[in-house]
Length: 415
View 1 (cartoon, rainbow, N blue to C red):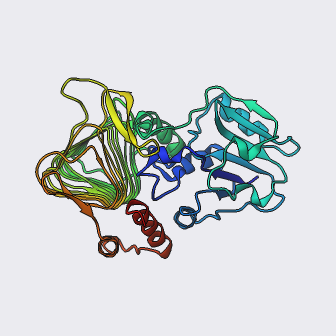
View 2 (cartoon, one colour):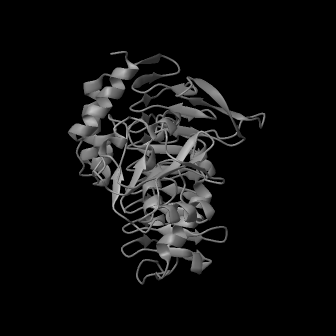
């Protein structure tokens, strides 16, 4: 049974993070939404649906076919925003996806959670978004309790539960402390909830405290001298927690460097916050760099509700959250000692610098700061910077990525 993850008409709420990737490519904890769903269904073959602009990048990133179903195949289509966790909803979807079961659409409110499509037509996934209209005339079944992410801040809401769930999924039957990874002077609290993968290193004086949640240090990662990691937490493959850093309740993705204080935040991958400064209740995309001393506020002075810019509505929306920090798109950068206000959204390929607080919404491809104002970041210059940055990690800017970034630049600049 192939599994097809799809995007619906709600993904624009996740800009700028979903501007450069399919929504299921977002990191929720240790795993992306795609990885979580695939493993929940027993790791079947996976097909991808995504917006036409994004589909080539999604196929390239995951090494999976995108854009069309095999003609006549029995396919379970699952919403890319669905959080696949053990419970009645997941069990019902597993039962539905069996040979001989009739076609069915599973809905919750106005959302399609999943659809079982025996003998599916290849063109079923040709549209940019799959919605209830896509499955018009199919028998519907209403679900209750399906967890569908709907807004940027839900990525932070779900972080701690995802880290706990992912740790259990990834360490079943594994040794907790492989020999050689831990220095003799490192301190480990609640050892049963700490996993240090082969090739990872925890250097002298570092502290791994899993009293309040598990800690997973992935292959090739390093926790440097006197750093403190408090669970639940994840340090991705080849990631670095710099000396004297304090990381709590956070997911630091592969090849990322983190220093200073990081609290309740996600660093997707290949991004750097390598110096002192505070990052709280925030989400950084890929290839982001925060200058030394950058600080994000995640609590208003009046302790009030935080509003956040929503690209789908073009307005700031109340979040119902007291703590919320920075959401920064891929390839965005900021200068030293940049200060971000509570609930700030910075788009793709922004370059922010100067004194004072930047606006709480900085559109993609903006260059400048609060004093001098912003101008459009020239496309070819931005792409040259990306090529330079990616080469440092032995990565290249592919034709698919270049085409997507060019399309985003054109949308932002009215071309």
